[in-house]
Length: 145
Image 1: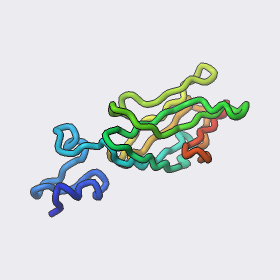
Image 2: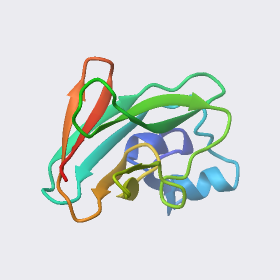
Image 3: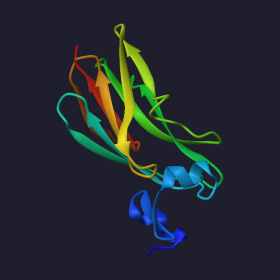
C-alpha cells in the first residue's frame, strides 16, 4: 500500500487505504493541490504521430499553463507552445489553446495522460504539422498548407 504523500510519483494513480485513486479526483475534492508542481507535457502531431516533450516548471502558489502563440521569426507558418504560470487552472481537454492561420484552426488538446504528464495532440485541419524545439524552452509547431 502507498501512502497519500507518494501518489504523485505513481504517474497520477496510486493507492490510498487499499483503493486505487486518481490524482484528478483528489485535486477536485481538495486533498491534492497542483499549484507549484512541475508538469511534463508530451506533444503529438496529429498526422505523423511525431512526439516531443516539454517540462514546465511550477511556481509557488501558481498553476502551470500552456500558451500557444504565433511565431513571427520567419515567413513560414509556425506557432510556439510556451510554459507560463497563472493563478487559475487551465483545462486542456475543454479549453485547449487555439490559433487561426489561413482560416484554419491550429488546436492542441489533451488526449490522455495524468494531470502531471498530459499527452497533447496538435492538429491543423487535415494538414500535416511537425514539432521541434526552440532555444527559448518552447515547442515549435510548423504548419504546411
